[in-house]
Every structure is written in C-alpha cells, then in structure tokens.
Amino acid sequence: MGPFVVSVKDGQRSIIDGQQRLTTLTLLLIYLNNLQKRLGLNEKLESLIFSEKYGEMSFNIQVDERIPCMEALFKVGEYEVKETDDESTLNMASRYGDIEKAFPEEIKSRLLPFFIDWLKYNVILVEIIAYSDENAYTIFETMNDRGLNLTPTEMLKGFILSKFEDSKKRQKANEFWKAAMQKIHIYDKDEDQRFIQAWFRAQYAETIRPGKAGSKNEDFEKIGTRFHSWFRDNLDKVGIELDDTEGFHLFVDKDFKFFLNAYRHILTAERKLTEPLQHVFYIRRWGIANSLSYPLLLASLQITDNSDTVLEKIDLVARYIETFVVRRSINFRKFASSSIRYTMYTLVKEIRRTEVHELKAILKRKLDEMEETWIGVRNFRLHGQNRVFVKFLLSRITSYVEQQSGLNSSFEKYYHNPGGKSFEVEHILADKYTSHKEEFEQESDFQEYRNRIGALVLLPRGTNQSYGAKPYSEKLSHYIKENLLVQSLCPLTYQNNPNFLSMKNKLALPFKFHEEFRKADISDRQKLYQAICESIWNTNIFADED
Image (cartoon, rainbow, N blue to C red; front, side, top):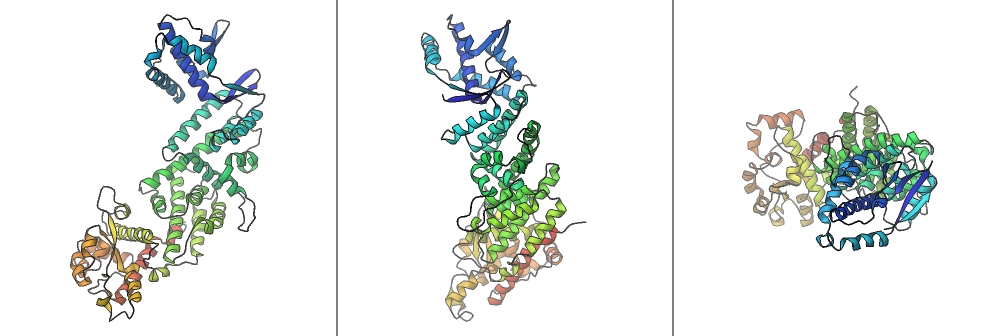
C-alpha cells in the first residue's frame, strides 16, 4: 500500500504522509478485533492497534481529540457522538460504521481467521523515517514528483505542515485544509489548484515572462505550473521566514482562510445572480480566462478587509473586466489570454492590496485610457463568430432598460432562462433584399445593415420564428406585447407609460418610436444602444465618493 513518511523529533513520531491509510487500517483492525471476539476467536490484533506502557493504552495513531472515540470503538464497537466533537472525530465514527456495513458476510464466520492472517502478512506498507520535518517534506515531495498521485496542493500542504512544531496545531490545520478542499471540490475536481494559483498570483507574484521568444518563465508562469515549488523557493515574497513556525501557522489560520472564503464567494456568484456580486455572474458568461480573472478579483483584497469591503472590491474588479471585454467586443477586438496576459498581470500588481478609493481610481484610469470607445457600437453588427456575444449584449441592454423602468426583470431571463422559454436574436428586417432595393444598391449593403445591433432585439423562441418573414409594418403591432426594448419601437409605448418615460428622461436616452424601419432608423437605434451601453458601463461608478 505504498510508503508512509514519518518525522522523528525528541523521540516522538509525526506522520507527514500516509495518515489516511494508517487511520483506515486501524479502524479496520479495530472492527476485526471486535468481530473475532464476538465469534470466540483469539487472533492477536491488539499490538497492531495500540501499545501499553505502565498500564496505559496508547493507540498507534494517537491524536488526543480522537482518543475517546478510538477507546469506545475498541472496547464496545460503537461511539456516541457528542455536540462538542470535532469534524475528524465525527468522520472517524462514520467511517467505522461504513466498515461494518461494507464488510462481506461470507468472511464473518469460519473464513475470518484466514482473512486476518492474510491481512497481517500480505498487506504491506513501507515506513520511511526522516529525522527532521524539512527532510520529511523533501522525501515527500521527491516521491510525488516522480509519478505518484499527490497533487501540487497536497505537496504544498505537506511542506507547510512540516513547519508546525506543535502536533495538535498541525493536526487541526490538516483537518481544516482537507475539509476546505472538499468544499471547493464540489465545483470541480481541480478547483483547489485554480484557487491557489489565483491566490498566489494575486497576492505574491512579482515577475512576468516577457513576450519575446525564448524568454524564461517567471513568477506568474511558475505559479501556474508548480506553485508548491514556487512557494518553497519564494518565502520572502510571501513574507515568511523558513524557520518561522508561527508565520506558517498564521499563513494557514489567517491568509488561507481569508482568501479561500473570498474565492468561494466568487464561485457562488458565478453560478447564481446576486446583487452584491452581479458582475461576477456576467463575466462568467462573457469575460476573460479564469487564469486572468481570478487573480484580478483577489488582488485588491487585504486580510483586514471586512466582508462588505471584500464584496465591494470583487464586484468593482468584475465590473472593470466586463466593461473591458464589452468595449473590446463592440470594436471587433479580441481578448484571448495570449494577447492580454501581460496587461492583466501588470494590473494585478497595480491593484494589489489597495484601498477601495485607490482601486476605483486605478480602474477608472485604465478604462479611460482604452483605445476602444463606445462609438464602436455605431458600426457593430452580428456576424458568424459573435452570436453568443450579441445575445449577451442584448440581454444586458434589455434587462437594464426594464429594471430602470421599475419592472421585475433580469439578465438571466433573456440570456438563459432556466425552466422558461428561451429567447433568440430577432432581425427586425426580414431577409428580403428585394423589398429594400430602393435604399440598398447591393445586397451585401442590405445584409450589413440588417445585421447591425440596432436592427436586432430578443424575442421568445417560437415568437421569433413566427415573426421572421413578415415585413416590419406587420411586426410592429405585435411588438407591443414583447419586452420593453422591443416595445420601444411602437408609438403606443410613449403614451400612458410614466415609468418608461421617466426612465428615458432620467437617463437621457434617445428613445423614439419607429413607424417604419429604414437606414436612418437603424442608425438611430445604433445611437440609442450606444447610449444605453454608456449608461450601463458608466465609469463614474469608479469615481471616489469622497
């Protein structure tokens, strides 16, 4: 069953690697010992479970908090759970119950002695003893770098815990770490690695590989591939001395807990649209790669930030990312990781551990310096590669107009409506060039205008198909039944609709109805959509309130 690594200090042994296997085998041996006693057998198993000195029992896996549970399981075969029990004790009692349920019936009688002998003489673990925690970690990492199954996260944990002198603190930190990893593995089996990569890049990475061919990897790249080794080699950047036991303890107890909690907020917000972190939800649908966005979202945080400040900072950065990608997209500019990584990693360093007012100022300056402006909306159109973004943009515009008019609306309804009718991009102009020859000399010219964003809206699936081939004059009377952005084409919307008119005036948006839909009308709608975009992604939100 592979090697286990122990560190020996002052005559005491600490398990560096193999605790789960040894604990599981101990529970199995306790169960077998109880079973054979009930059957009147006398197989000698006690020495594999505990040792005795001066009449005192000492379990071979000795953790003080678990002793009452271990004793109860050994003596009576069950443990009565208490409210004060820690998670590891509860887990141990549950796993013993699992062994009872899973143990095969056919081995429980006459075959039991043979199974016990087989277990004692054929199941082998190799003990590797190191005479310092540092050597133990080196062995541990070397073994796992050569093809065994520990992940970089587990190797990082092994190194950090090897610096704990107090075995109780080490055990407590180990249990916390394992429980924390299990919680984020709910999202994805590799989420632990993404978290640590994002955290280390956000808070500690200093150097970036230049874009020139043949350049060597630096902090940001090394963290992406071997963060456990990078951590060990760059303790000065993390702010811990190699022999600073208390520093390692605080790193787990303070920093790890704080950034894990912030990261879990991000993961939750990506999946459920909520007000405090709504822009995190948006950039999951249209944003930059996680390898860039997660470090940015965590970079400005300081462990002294309260929960409200954490949420505010994360959402401000998410708002910046969304504004960045939308402005690039409406100007037909790509934002693949390879083209923006240097820009984004540099920004990580600029916003690192900033106060809210500093963060706002930096993000506003960055957006103000962008070459891509909202004027790009005036020529923006649907083409074969950007349908997903067009739906995203129309979903944001539609839900914003409705929300600002006091309606119960949401982006999610239009972009992806779980349990409801889905929405599709509708061309206001039917695909009939012959009906528009007086305005467009070439069909390509007509198609370019027909696909412009101002000539597009969202309609429910089915409705979209039924309207598709009709001329605008016939569609218009039906549009009054649809969402508010579609309704705004109709003259009736501008009568007896005080909430809509109030929104129009308050935001100074150039809404107007269109009894026909020609070239000039499309241009007017382009300008309207531009104004709505400028309102949604207004950089004044980054202005310091003071």
